[in-house]
Structures are given as structure tokens and as C-alpha cells.
Length: 345
Image (cartoon, rainbow, N blue to C red; front, top):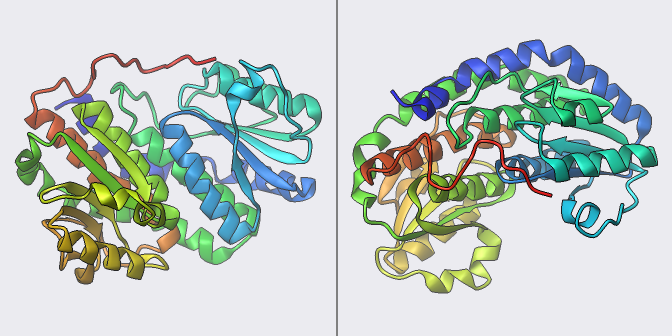
């Protein structure tokens, strides 16, 4: 079994471990955030971690009513301008904790008096040391270059922090269900391994989500590009309708993340539009109405609260990307041109 296959399978256990071991620490950090009373949250991240930051834009905004901006690390490094983050909670997210540009944002913000948090998979990393507070995602060593379990752990850390800031017992109770839902999702994803070969000669695609799952759409797009070397892009459903839908032609593969919730009706309408254009829709959902216009079904278990669906909805995308890469004959643990730790300035 490949490393990435093992690490995808480890996600329920990683989530359960994180929920248990970081609960008290995150409660303390949430209390510090409430005391600080920030004007906004700024998150610095790159790559997969940036998609976890996009998820936080929705969880913090909807549940804690705190606006979230995605930082621009190059402003701090290449241009040498430390923007004013003094009234913000500044979060640096990096699985390795070694991203120089992400760390620079955190260092600049801390010097200005901001409340700083590092989220990493290494408590001894430079980013963990640079921030005033640290959340250790406790995913264990990730040997595959393409991130899987560290991404879902970052999402869970964001969800835990959201629930802790709000003090909501309902949100806390929902988090406890995640390991079971993640395992159920893995079980439901098994058929993907059999039909992924249909897309062996796929040369382009689109990945679409909305709301909480805008992050999912972009992360699925990234995984397919990393592992399969196929050109594609992740879109918000709303943005997709504002022009990019023009690229759709007969047989065009479109991965649509459409779990139940506030965005569901819009996603079903989109699927009807894709069907009119004879697109090849690969649909991630738990609702039969989403599968009416689907070529392929990637099923989720019923009952997952909408705000937590990105943590499970990414799993079918990971399995598809891995299975497609295998069908194409690629080295799935060591994609060409990539390293586990990418150093950017």
C-alpha cells in the first residue's frame, strides 16, 4: 500500500486524536481571543494550508461573526512592508511550520501587538516558536508529498477553534461525531477506485463548490493537479456562472461538491445547467437530488452538519485523485517536481 493510501485511511484516527488532545489548549486560546476582542482575523498560509484558511473564513464569519482576511505574505517579505495587523488575531498555518513567508507575517504581527497563533504538525518548528500560541494538529508523520491527513486535521483545528470561541455546546457536540462520519465516508469512497480509470485520458477539468465547500473545490483541484498532472481549476459556483461556464463542452469533466445545506439548491441548479451542456459531472453529496444529473456518484453519509462537511467531502476527492494517478501510471507518493517542504520567501 502506498503512503498516501495509508494516510487517507488514517484520517478518522487523526481526527479523534486531535479532538481529544488539543481540546483544552484550544479552549485556552479561544479565551485569549475573546479577551483580545479582535477587529478581524488574518490568516497566512500557502498551498493546501491556504485552503484550510478559506474554510476558516466561513466558520469564523458565520459562527463567531469575525471577519477573516487571507494575508499576502509577499507584502511582508519581498516588499518589506509590515501591514498594520495590531488589532487582529493572526494565524499562521503550515503543516511543516517551516514556511519563511508565513512565519514573517506572524513575526511582524506579534511585534505590532497582535495575538498570534501557529497551526502546524510540528511543535518544535520555527512557526510554532514564533507565535504566542500554538495548535499542534497531531497528524503524525506524513510521508506522502501530497497532503491529505494534515489538511483534514487543519480543518478540524479551525472548526475546534470556532466552536471554542463561540462557546456553543451544539457545535462542540457536532465535532465529536467527526471520526465516525470520516470512517463512513472512507467506506463509501471504495467504489471510486473502480471507476476512476474511466478518466485516465482526462486532460482538463473544473472543480466547483460554494460556501464552506469553496475550500473543498479548490483543494480537490490542487490534489488532481499535484498527483495527475492535469490542468484544472477550482471555482465558487457563483463565480463559475459569471463567465467560466463558457468553457463547458460535451464530455467536460466537472467535480461538483454539493452536500446538503444553504448552498444545495444552487448546486442542483448548476448540475442541471451542466447536463444541458452535456458535461461529465462527478458529484460529491449525500442527497439523491444531486445525483439526478451525475455521471459518477461520490457518496457522503447522511447527517453531517453543513459547517463540518468540508472535513468529510474532501475524502472522496482525495481517493479520486489518488486512484486516477494510479490509473495514469504516476508515482503517487513522489509527484514529479515536488518536495514535502516548499520554502518560499
